Length: 236
Ligand SMILES: [Mg+2]
Image 1 (cartoon, rainbow, N blue to C red):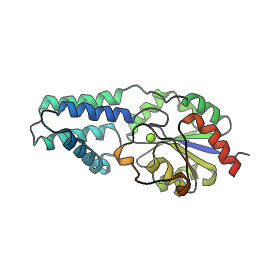
Image 2 (tube, rainbow, N blue to C red; image 1 turned 45 degrees about the horizontal axis):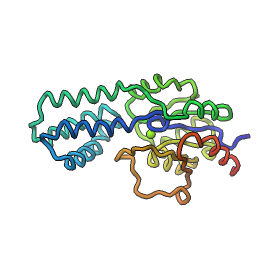
Image 3 (cartoon, rainbow, N blue to C red; image 1 turned 45 degrees about the vertical axis):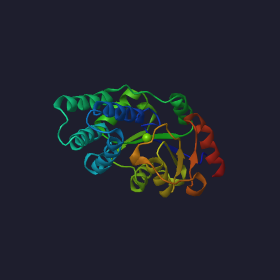
Image 4 (cartoon, rainbow, N blue to C red; image 1 turned 180 degrees about the vertical axis):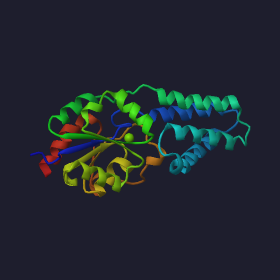
């Protein structure tokens, strides 16, 4: 019997690309507001406003767009034009409508892992947008359970793991964020597998973490996952 019975997968930047859209958006906003604001000041304030608004707006592109507008109004002291605000809204809508691009190897790896283990998808953010991305990813059928949550903390994982009927030590979570996908799962008694993505959102950054000390595994890409899960089985 496999030791790792259930594998949880994060969505954004684990199964499909997402954060590059935010990085591109920051570039576009800097260009748009260049007549009004110096780049460094803008970058700093965008992150501060986004972070401060998370508790009100939650994660996702709609809240991000509102934060961009708030930043633009504040930093230009109200001089930003209606047409420039219109461009920020268009930017947000374009991000929401962006096609879902799967990361390399995802389809094959999910098929392989699903042969011996149960799969659940655990993603956070805007409900409508996440549901739309899951539907457009073509991956929904692979998962016995799909959870779209407001935040991914230890309590969230305890609840989801309990719902699978599996003890935490037989649950592994795979994701690109230490803060959201790995450390709270380890704290809940499960296994964490970190697969870093090219871009890390400011609000997901963790200052100091170490696989050996903090009890998780780190892979370069998802193609190493079947072997990593087999290695966890051997330990068990
Ligand atoms: Mg992610």
